[in-house]
Each structure stands twice: as structure tokens, then as C-alpha cells.
Length: 374
Image 1: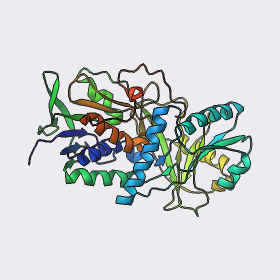
Image 2 (image 1 turned 60 degrees about the vertical axis):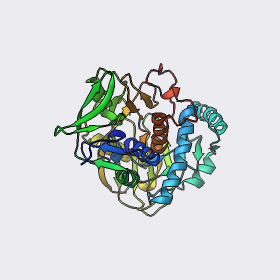
Image 3 (image 1 turned 90 degrees about the vertical axis):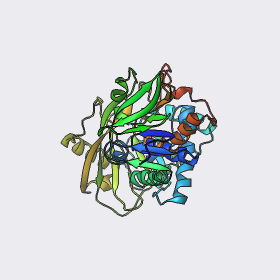
Image 4 (image 1 turned 180 degrees about the vertical axis):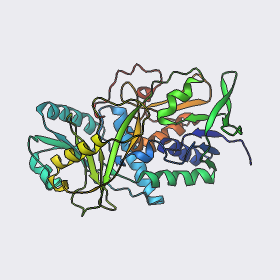
């Protein structure tokens, strides 16, 4: 088999597959390598939410463009894309003030988002607990999709213009005169390309260290669960940012409730174990917001890794090794930002024009422009 490509991608999640998809659309021959199976990492463990409500101009723009690309992909493949919205709840005056400031920024970027009062919230989500609730932020064009179907759709395109190699771990790079020339697999096969893109998510830092690169991306453990199906009765992802809050929505295709919360304190590392504490707490938090869910059966729980950066924004940049690129640090937003991140990466790599300033995603930024809506 031919062992030469125009570009090699390491990592078979949403970022790697979206990047490969858009590179093939530019006519490049792409090889993608995944050490396990496609979606084995963070992508296959996410809950499938897609939102555009962020606190920095670049993330808002990227998210809005991603939604457009999800729509376009839905026309080619059934990825179960559905725009049921996102609803961020405000239980304090401080949160009301913060949301209203962010709405102004989001509207200036063209996002159709609004502050809604308690009465409107009860119409959007019948049966929600309104105790201490002061209002919320609602964007109806946010939504959900099936991560497995999205990645498979991208992978099919890559296969048509190159190859997708699963159960094939990249163990090394061959670098000559500060330029990457090839990769080596665990079975000592060598594949050549002048472009290599590292999209290995929580493993980026460890993989890069062997080449003298210090990439500020750190794995963080998060847990999630899904319930038995129930008759559909609400559309949006409900987000409660209280210290003991959570977020969840109802899958439009089967009615199951899927959700998670951010642990405090955070749990660093790559441990994928699941805990009874999460099971107990997530059930309590969901039932507090939606009493109707109190007796619903939980059928599965799992954990996965967020790839965190110091400021909560992704990294999309070249490295000091010519031809080697880093795309990661999605901070739990990889699936929702993935389509546009993949397209931007293809533009960046091929020099065909990036329509907006990517300095906020630079590897060498000062990491001071923090994302508030994590």
C-alpha cells in the first residue's frame, strides 16, 4: 500500500476527522491514524450539545459558523442534527448582569439570543422548578447532534481521498532539519507527509513533550449519564451554572435525558472511572430543576476527558517544528466547535485564507482572554 500522503492526522475524534474532511475537500490526500477506534476519546464521551453562546468574539464566530456546517452536513448525511436551543438559567442578580452583558456581545456578532423572564422559561420548559429563578438566556438556534454519526460522515469522506487507520497508534515522528517528514506506527510502519496535525485531545501534551514541545493542554475528568427514554416534553439544553448545578437535555430521536456537571474541585488526569457520587448528585440536581424526572431510571454512566487550557479557549497553531500543527484544548467544546475548527485548520494549513483573526487561539498567546461561559 502507498505510504505517502499530503497530510497525516493523528487522532480520530471530531477535530481530527473534521480537519481531514475539509482537507480532502481541497483535494489533499489524507491519512488519519487513531490508536483505538474512531470517537474512542473525548468525542465519543460527550453529550452532543451544540451552542453558540460564548463570551469571546472568536468563539462566538466559530460556533456560529459550526452550526452552519452542521446544517450542511445534515444535508449529506443523517447526523441527527436538531436545533432545540440552549437555555442558561440565572439564579442570582450577578448572573443576570453577566448574561445581559454577554447578550450584547453575542448580538453584536449576529447571534439571535435573548434574555427571557421566568414566565417565558416555563413556556419553553414546562414543569421546570422556578424557585429562586430570576430569568435566563435563550438561543433557539443552538441544538444537538449525534457525535458518532458526525465523525463517521467525516471519516467516509477521508477514506475516499486517502485512508483511515484505526487500532494504529503513532509512536513517533521523524524530524529532519526541524521539519517533520514522516510518522511511525507501533508496528514500525512509516508513513510520509509534509504536514502532520496532532489532534489527540487530552494526550497532546504528553505526545508533544517527546519532541521538546511544551503544550499547555491538561486533561480533566468529567462524568455523564443517560436515562431511559421518556415522552418528549422539552427541547433545549438546560444549563444551571450554580456551584451545584448541571446541564442536560432530551435527545430528540429517542427521548432519553443526557447530561453532566462540572465537578468542583476539578478532577485533573486521565482516569475514566465512574463514581457513585456523580450518579447520586446528578440525579439530585436534575430532579431539583425538573421534578418530573425524579423517578426516571438511569441506564448508563461514564466519564471522559476535557482538554483544558489556562484561558478556556482552544489552540490552533503551528509549532516550532515545520509542518507540525497542534489543534486541541477544546475545554469541553470540541464537538460543538469541531466543524468550523476543522475548516479553519484546513485553511490555515493550506494558506488559502482565514477570514478572521485567530490570535486568541495562538499557541504563544498570553492566555489572559478568559472564556466565561465554560
